[in-house]
Image 1: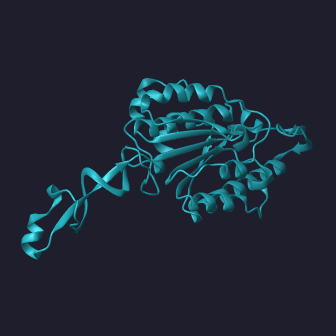
Image 2: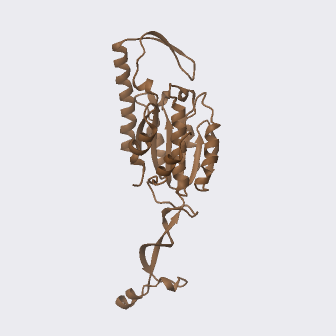
Image 3: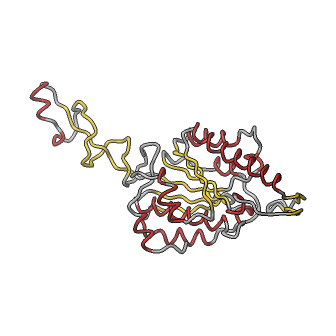
Length: 293
């Protein structure tokens, strides 16, 4: 990822927000719906045979003449799932979208590992072969190695990829993509709604990070051009003049606005990530809504 130690030191002070309390059966740093033996008080309940007598609240017994025990919140491991779009369209831009997508996946994966969450990183083209670790920040080297082997080419089906996720309890699921897929571009498409409903059903806090190249956000092409689709190799001949660029900008804003509105409606988080943006500013300012701070 080519990020310095100062970046990771600052990043290590943050923690990803979780939309649901964890119910995994592995020890970690997240507050669970289960009760355990940590020092954070949760609730009282009536004493039952077999309970640890050290948890009896004798003050309550003196007032109520009944035995109650104190329960404490148990800390459990949460799951951070990151789905990376590795289609050919991500290999575009002077500052390539795939480079920014890889940095985002690595940095957010590090956040999970640093907080002892289980991190599962998926290549959307090969959902059956994810990177999986709950080994703490030392696993960042394995995560980086996995990211460096990702091949950006061909096409992906984001809905199919999401539905291939195995059930794993509450957590956060992050989709990193340009979302330049026909199913998303169609104005009346229900694909995003299906994805958001599916992940809500799976009790996931959903995050959509739309990665776009600076050239896509600020078009400066002129003249008559043959545009070639990077994925299906189809061509489109267009004349880029002021009116054409204005139409493009309008359609793009409608597209990104629709993703943002649909995400907000479903309780998901959406952020537009520009490849020309300083990465430090992006992580520590633009994406602040992702963190418990």
